[in-house]
Length: 610
Image 1 (cartoon, rainbow, N blue to C red):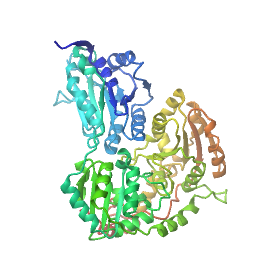
Image 2: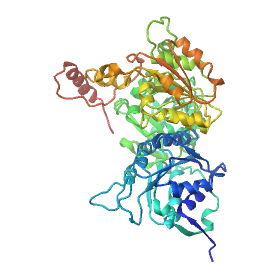
Image 3: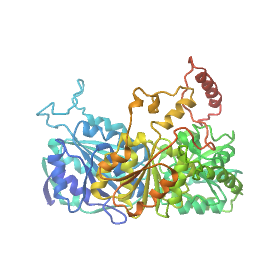
């Protein structure tokens, strides 16, 4: 007879989570972020309290940003560990949907546990319940469906017996990895069931390393051996597969240069002879020039986002072939690519054997020297302290203060482009950019998540004033928990990045910078005082020299440290970049828009989607 234990569904959920381990022997779910409400406090809240000695519960201040912290934690640990996030029903649940989208785009594991309406429908409509007039099964949690890799609504306690194994399989599968949502009906959380004791036995989930199909391997090997000017595009999958050393060995063995996406940056040290640096819209001339003439593009662990491919106008050689080495079939066959469906580490190993003896002479040293000769002066400290510093000069100041353990992180606005071009990442994990969703508001919470994942790292977050205003509440959480990281707030008084895009597409400056917004002249925000009011150590500096002095003090400060500096919203690195497909109006009364549209039509001719 099967031995059982009587538990509520919430207790069974928490107990199962605590028994799931990665191959290093660590509990895969490292903790649970929670904001309790009437949809989860009585069920999941009570269960987490009962397991507080084995699963740490962290209290957030905003459902979206506490989920961002969980996602950053998983990203920095290369998906080897993750976190759970729970909320009440209604607005609490919906606040997490944006974070679920971020995790989905970036292929990152997180376990969402939103409360839901009553399965028994007794009190319908319950507080915060959205009623669908034509479908009685719908709740706000249906919004998670398109942004979850696996979704399940738990309407009976025994549903967990099938739902939980599916959830962990998804989060720990290299091809399907992404967010999981278990929508927990609030009455079911409290209902009991006799669960088999065997269900809670410790289980180790091993990282699956998919080996390439022999036919695909042979075809790709033949294509590479026929190539005269190949290039590698390294994506985030290189990091998640622990394949950075394998990528370096492959590139060195065959002489193939490497370009790095935002997610792939730091896979090779910035000064490696074969590292061409950043690619695409936020890329530099070495990578973009080589990619424009390459006859074979080997993507490794990249999903070929439009910023990487220049909206598929970058790979301009009419005879070029694209190869995609990826664990996911969806990504491996994008845009007519030759698929090599495999784990990055295993795939590179078997591919190097298949092309044994093949080597090209990249000859990229001169390109790199020319690039750094152009951009390095842009990051130097200004000699004129009477003008506002540029974002490039801020990057330079932070770079000069960086240590071997520094992690530069960001997500949206101006800095992702500047950092991709200018930041010199010395080793894997030194660069953490969320640029799949480019979600404003990820930065501060994400910095906290990175520091929780790797307490030994020196985490420096770049945040614009717009991002700070969107989501700053986890600064208070970091203060409460004593988590130390640095936030450099570049205040350009508005959405400077989109203002430049508006101008670049012929538009008038409108509603982006505060100066061009209705009532913007009345805006006066003291970011240092605001951060200080949440318990952070905060200072406003007036120059790059003062910024460097302030940064030098960060190692002696406990908790979050915020340094605010005013910057010029207009200048950006004038070198590198490539076309990006942004729709320009066909008809306008503005001559600038008509000119931009003519340029758009001309650039569109270079776009090749297969």
